Image (tube, rainbow, N blue to C red):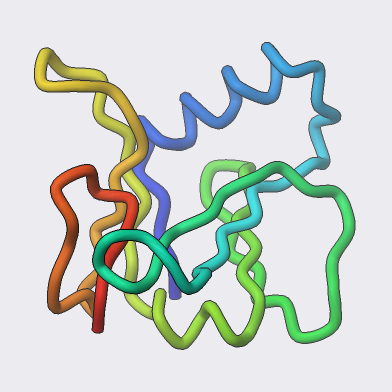
Length: 108
């Protein structure tokens, strides 16, 4: 299961509005090889489901993950931080044994 915090949901709704996205568009989260720790997160809005996709919904917003990426993301919570120490989405991933300083790559 993947969870989304209320602050991340609000930011996703704002981004959809700013980008002129349709209400039914969803966030696709993927894990790709690369980054300073070996694996990196990739996020983008999408409107097409693919075979094997896993769908999670919270507060009316969907997050979709392909089956391969899901193995790295089980139990993750997507959060959004807008504090003085920086803004951005935060991946609280219990499967990550090592994270880079920027928070966009990890290793298992």
